[in-house]
Length: 108
Image (cartoon, rainbow, N blue to C red; front, side):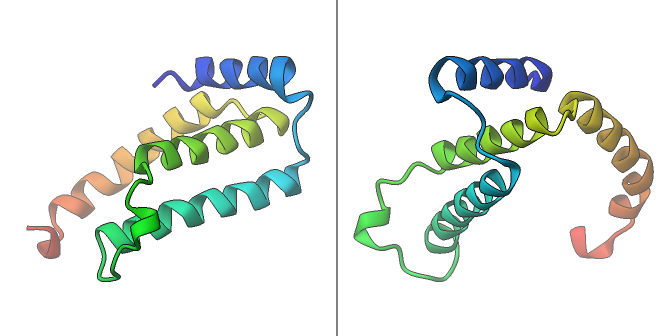
């Protein structure tokens, strides 16, 4: 996934179809709601809760895409180059966590 291009696609969509971005607090609430929908599917489909009949048709990929969309909106409206931030984070995690995870007996 090219995050930089995805941010541009979302920005274009907002301008052409969405009129404007919701404010940051509204988008934060929206993100929380979308993450809750992902959590519900995972808890019921992969966890110990039983899945309700009404939830069986829910598409986990679609719900995850909703989360990504709102994250991209928040990045756009706060001036974050999410590609640069993600690349930096992956570099930090790679350097910091490689040996830690390789040496974690719980993961073997």
